[in-house]
Length: 149
Image 1 (cartoon, rainbow, N blue to C red):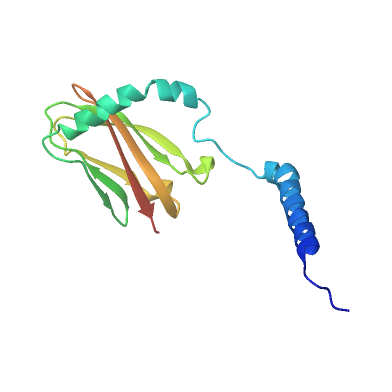
Image 2 (image 1 turned 180 degrees about the vertical axis):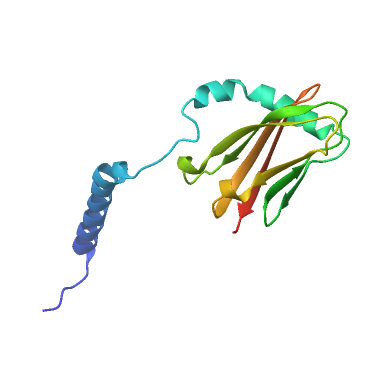
């Protein structure tokens, strides 16, 4: 039995595909899990001008911040300043909220301006390293990194 393809069959096939797509969108798609970047995204958006100012402060530093991926972890080298550096860093993993990690740090004036993030905090994959610190001004730095070990 041969079926002749004509306008009637084409319209019916188009309707069937469209109805199947709508059923998928209505019943299956809402059950796909998703995570927001932040639960307080509106509050964070209102504070974004402060972050822009802190990023401009980073650009005014005499040297750029350097990030090295070593076998022992991630090393961040701050530019030399004459004050203590204190703040916190966040390893943000967009694929899983459970792999996010935040810790405070303090680097003394007399020490080398280095911060080492040990590899025990890192799982293989992409991270966004966000560092906020204060000396005489507030600073904000972010960089995408890939941990491969």
